[in-house]
Image: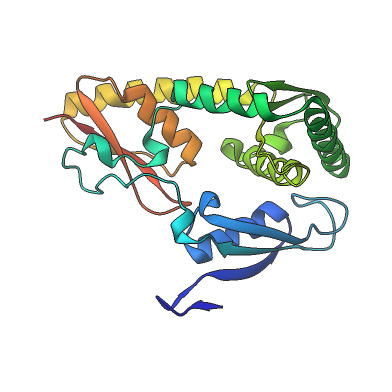
Length: 265
């Protein structure tokens, strides 16, 4: 299907061995990120998700109305010193701040006990079915913290759930969020972690950012990192936002968007 206003494709249907693979194929073809898309799961395939089962998963992905985008303006792609007010959403501090805490507290205030219990039940049932299809046994802890539904998985078998650089874990989190938010008209933020992977990954990225910052400062030459998810790019940006010698910006399009570290002039 085509958007008559700019002759660009705005809606596609893709099939793959797993739901997350199908979603990524569609996003790549449309040239958009998950946050810019409305995603409908047509079929989850036989016997679960993420490569398990004989029947392919099928999804339909459509671009959101451009007027509904909430992302801030993009930073310039050239290494010229980026302006502070041109940061994109992924370039804001990871922990951002009091605004995020305020937002999540507001969510917690409007969710009833019944809604929270329903959300937890739906999330746990979905993950149980998913892990069963993947033949993975894990302990699950689920609780609301400041309005966010926090789900923690513990097991020695979670490597397949985490995936390369956490990509499968991100896909699982996204799918859980889709399922949970069908149960209530109020938006519920969802976080899924496995064996404390996200905290370990954050520590590794912060250490990498500091190491590369020293290298860039010494060489006076920019350094471009490998493509990362918006979540991981935010960690890099936040780790170096107060560095007196280097600054950061992002280049490229999802899912190949990268962080660039450049010396300050």
